[in-house]
Amino acid sequence: MSQQVKNRVSPGDSEPVARDFINAIGGRLGRFAQVGTQRFWTPLRVLITTSLVFLSFGFLTKANCIQGTRGADGAISLNWSGNRQYTSACYNDIVPLYGGRGLDSPGFPYAFSWVEGDLTRYMEYPVLGGIFQWFCAVVTRFLYPVVEAIPGHTLPESGLYFIITALVMSFFWVLVIRMMVELTGNRVWDTVLVAASPLVAVHAFTNWDIPAIAAVVAAMVAVKRGNPLWAGVLIGLGTAFKLWPLYLLGAYLVLAARNKTWRPFISMTVAAAITWLVANVPVMIAHSHAWNEFLRLNRERGAEWTTIYQVLDRNLVWDLNNPTVLNVVSFVLFAGSCVAILILGLKVERQPRVAELAFLIVAAFLLFNKVWSPQYSLWLVPLAVLAVPQWKVLFPWMVVDAMVWPILMWHMLGEENMGLPHEMLDLIVISRDGFIAAMMVLVIRQMMGRRVDLVDDAHAGRDRLAGPFGAGSRRQAPSQAV
Image (cartoon, rainbow, N blue to C red; front, side, top):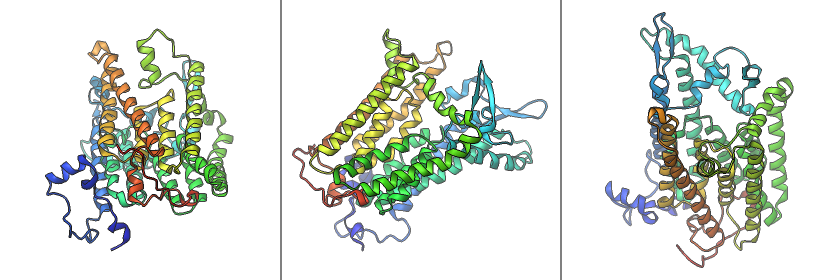
């Protein structure tokens, strides 16, 4: 029996939420139980199976939006009649953007444009995000004739596109689970909070967020294995897919400054920059206006429905919809948060863990950014589980955060369709933000040694994710356990 299996922490011993469930299905392990001897149902296979079940739930929550109807001429069109995208909360960006971004026609997505008012619009996603959508669209157009050969079917082409996209992203999510098993180490069962997260059931297929999450988790695995160069490549790929994986560099910057481990940080940063340039420069040169669309839209758009800025705007007389003002306010608040995290990471007595720093940075970005599409919360799930794996805190947060979506959909129906008043949306948004702020406080207290760090306790005070950025043992008894 390996040392890691021997030291594995059972959630039944440390988590009241898990203990109640384990007691219901037969009770905790006995003193003489042989841990790690099961040949097939290993923790990895159990967790992958669990993730597939919740990915299935994620598909079913969106399935009402991929249905079509056959017209009198025999043509099949998407059927969103009766505001079903809102009434069944099945809305997702994947289905409408298939036609809306020219993915239903041959051609490179960044060569496609359309006129919106007096503005020429282009694909607004970063390069790898657009290419990922294009790849799934090519497969869809190739396979749809097979669907058309089925008598009486009513699946529109955009519905098949959703199915193919969901299958590909499910593959990436299973990879996330596989990598989380390695990162959680002796607390392997914490990964169930990723595999069975309510946010997966609601947002796995709302947008194209999963590949970027996979890139971030893979980068942490690469650092853990002592390969900062490959971690930089993965961060560069993730940043070419969505912007936020770039912030992972901030966590390693704190450790590099604290331990004077600049060489791995520089190699990681240079690799990330080169990878990002390799992915972006061809599109930047060939389709400069399209490449700039992501930056233009983020610069000129107002606050999104579920940001704290919109909550203030809906309830106060302040005008917070000016994009220029919002850009300055959100940047200053986020930049100030990053500086505070850097100072905290350098000043605390014990070395902060990578996951603690990464969670704080990404959470601060979400809280202060002017855009918080509800599916962005999925970014935090692996980081939160690695940073502060307290089930009685994380699971309620995920439930509340998942509830933002159906309440937003109900609100978007509008008063004329008996939609919810904005006060209900404001309440759930404030509740979600409160949970995340509370988790940030827990992580900060953990970094300061004022509460027990369960991950530290399970790994003899060492941060397994630090790799070449580590500095040996970090164990320090907390002054106050909570």
